[in-house]
Length: 515
Image 1 (tube, rainbow, N blue to C red):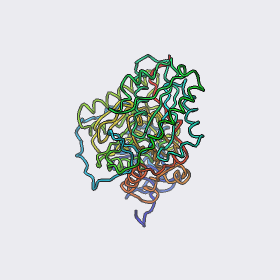
Image 2: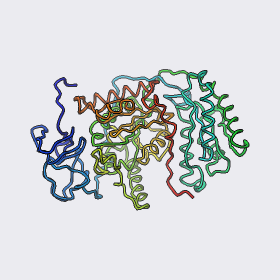
Image 3: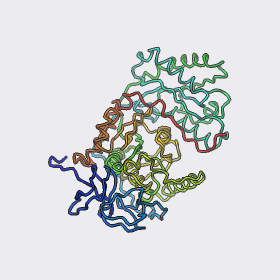
Image 4: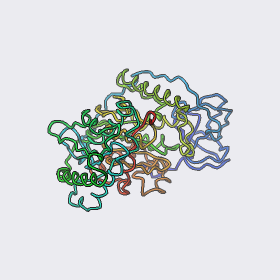
């Protein structure tokens, strides 16, 4: 970090860009400098928003990151604020150039380790939870009553290696076609949490008459943990004889499981066993400039160790997918991504919506104008390595390297799929101030700008805003994120964990109608 650093007025990311980003609040009339060029601000421009660096005629493409983010709806003069009032979004043909820029594999400087839980069956965890999993909303309260009874009893003090007993509840589980897409996806999600590497044991709780029957989940084989594993424990309220009796049976079952779950210690495990979820929420105009590229650098460091980094939020890849198809390890992998993009175009159109409904009002207040701009910044979280696979929502993650999982952009739903797929640690970038957490997976939150970090210091783990406010490099912050990943994987508590956040965020994706 330079000791003589002077904070810039604006940031122009590429020479071909015709917009720059305000690095602070800009005042109308002031002269702004970038390199050897200067522009006078034509209006007050909020931090993180864009201004025209050159004249942009009506209909001309607006470029940021060296890529198209929209088109001018009218003539825009140098120094003018560039945002939703003068930018249009239109579909345009991207050059997918399949597999034309596949990078060579990265090599780590040294093997790094974290202290985690070796389950002995190919799963390597960063936490050690016991889950009470509801198959349907009708058993949600009972599941919570069981977990609350355990916690208030004080029994967990006798089991210091157990991070907690958590009720996994949701609003679905019935009124959907039996063995249809929603049923299959919910079962995949529930099973993914049950057999998660951060979970030492689980109890299934159902009502008894729902579509998402526990016996169907068990018999389907999704819960298999290999030879010698104990059979899943299942309680149904109707068979137990009501709420009170089910709670008593659940408390007894948990008490019987706790000694076994506690009988595990953290051991050194190669960092290459980690599966990293990358997520952004409450994004702003700095997301693609500071936090996301830094997280991408950290993802590259993990992949170099032999680990896996997962990029998700398909609607927030839209408009930037051509950057990933070029890095796809095969044409088949690239086509899987494009198939998901086309599905989302169909799916949103089915309901009279369009993908550019994203960015949200908060994103726009933070300076993001179009979905193309948001997506180009979002894909930076995935780093620079080859795209190895594309997965369905909550599908088990088996490939090493960079992987895309098809999820919605809505953070709780997206993260639920990523965790169900097997991610053991998460890094969540935010420019507006998300307070997200997710049990059983620790979530490191990275602020895109220093004012946010200082304002919400009790909730942010890392300040990536120092890239602009103090002259730190993307690589420096990326290494900081990587070191934090190893520390948190080894047991360091994140800010969201210290707050106890993470028990209300389980939100499986519901695709079709509720019948």
